[in-house]
Amino acid sequence: MYLANADWFELPRQGPFRTFRMFYTTGDGERVGAYIVLPQVANGQGILYLRGGTRSIGMVRPTRLLAFAQAGFFVMAPFYRGNLGGTGKEDFGHHDIEDACSAFDWLQQRVSHVHAFGFSRGGQMALLLAHHRPVARTVSWAGVTELKWTYEEQKTMQKMLRRYTGGTPDTVPDAYAVRSPLHVAPQGEVLLIHGAYDENVRLRHATAYAARHSEKTMLQTYAYAHQFPIHEKLRVTWNVLNWFETGIYNR
Image (cartoon, rainbow, N blue to C red; front, side):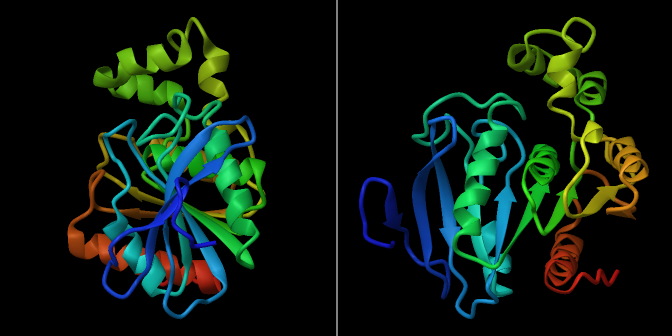
């Protein structure tokens, strides 16, 4: 499994943790890159970390994954198609949701439970994944749930979203709906983390999802914006990891 080759090679250690860069093949035939971080003392569970942003913006950093591995989780973090040597082109939650689904399938073969953790655009991907696959527990932190709201809220993203979808929410509503997890139910438990003063992804994304899927969703809001202060980010992350393992979120 860990032999160096074109699709799998070890990176310099991140502290005590073995870290790898690998490629996997998606169900629709794309070659997608990902980081793997192995825990020192495994708890038998895995975390699929779904990054925010697009292309080089918001790219996965191995150091972000260390807290997950330190807590005992086997960590996999896809780059999404078309990035860092991968084939195809990402399209913001339509065909590239297969990147998350195929990563889930790969990870599920190696651990007892797979959890998903997504931030911003990654929260959108995590919630869509939770509809398509039996994710044990899913965290969407500042996640997009209704893409047409993102189009309305973020003028600087409108050109990019038109390119990915083929138009505006008025001209191609189905292209926005299919990318919006608000409209599809999750299979497992969901925890939404959101800043009350988030201007990048407004709080309504979280409150609307929690209201529509209330039986399986817990919402935790904080008096911050899109990015939390580093000490709070670390504290909330540890609370999330505890929730993954125990089902208990200690605020």
